Length: 436
Image 1 (spheres, rainbow, N blue to C red):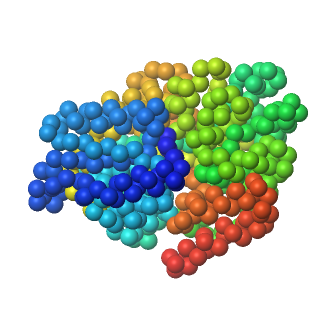
Image 2: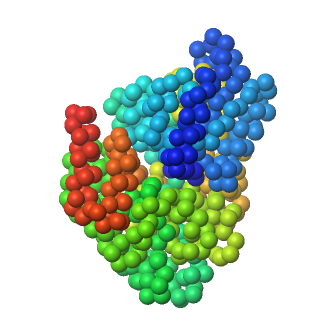
Image 3: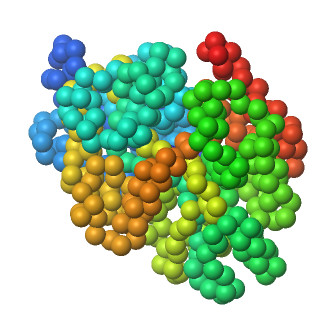
C-alpha cells in the first residue's frame, strides 16, 4: 500500500476539481478499446520521491516516447481520496483511463463485483504478465463473481511487492547500547529502555493505516496460515474473541498504557509519522516497505536500518497495489500499453534501485546493497508463504472501521473487548451478504 496518503480535506478539493472536468479520457475515435485515443488519463498516489513515484514517472516518459501525439494527463491523488471516493469516481464520466488502486476483497474486489473495472484476463496472458508474476503475487490480481480474491478473472496488475517491516534509528539504538531484537520479548525490552530515558519508542500514525498494521502484527504473533486464510479468504469462521485478535487488541492497548505508543498519535496521519521519523524524533517506525525509498533519499542526519517484526513468521504484505483499467476508460489500449511499460526490465530495475520491491526485475540489475537487501527480504517472506495481506481487506468499508477502532484503543475510549465487537460486526455482516 509509497502511498502519498494525503488528508481527506485536500483530497476532497482535488476530487471536486476532477469531477468538474468533462470526460477526461479523450476521444476514443469510435474504437471499443480506444486504440485511436489521443489522451491517456492516469491517476496514482505515489509521492514523486518514492521508489514507485520515480519508476512511474520514468514509465510516463517512456510511454510518451513510444506514443508520439498522445497526451498524458497525470493527476496525483491522495490514497485516502481514492479509497473513499472510488465508486463515485469510476461510475462517472470523469473516470481515468488507468489508475493505481488498493488490492483486496474490500477494494478492488468490490469494484470488480460492481462492474466498475475492466476484465483484463486476455491482456494478462497476451502480454505475458502472467509469466512475470508468481502464483502468490497473482492472488490479488484475480477476483471471483463475489469479489473474493485468489481466483476468477483478472482485474488488475501488480508490478511491485510490499511488506510491513520495522525501521529503526541506528544512532539512537547505539546511544543506549541496544541490539536489534530477535524476539517480541527483546523488542519490548528495547522499548522499555527508550521509555526509561524519556523517549517515546514508536512513531505511529493513528489517523490512517499504520496503527492498525501494528495491531495486525501483534495478532499475527499468535497466528498461523490457517488463521490468515480463515480471516482473509473465508475458509472457516473467525472467532474475534479467539487468541489471535484478542492478543493483538490487548497487547496494543498495553503498549499505549506503557507509553510505547503516544496517546496523541490517534490524530497523526501517515505522512506526519514518516516526517517525524525522518527528523530523528522517534527511534522506531513500524510500517511498509513503500517508505524505504523516501527514507533513503531524505534521511541525512543518522544511519537507519530495518528488521522484520521480531518473532513473527507471518507479516502484513502482498503484491503491491494494482494498475486497474476502469470500465469507463476511453483509452483502454493505451492503458494496457502503459501497464506493459511499468513491467519492462528498465522500469522494474529503476524501481528496485530506487528502494522499491520489483516483481519482474533481473536481480543483477539491483546495484545498491541496501535496496538488494530489501528485495531479498521480500523474496524470503514470499517464498516461505509469509505474506498475510492487510487487516482491512476482508470487508467493504473495513479500512475506516479499523482506523476508528484503533483510534479508540489509543485514546482510551474503547476497551479491547469493545474494539473486537466493533470490528467483528461488519466482518460478519459481509459474510452474511455473501451467503457464507
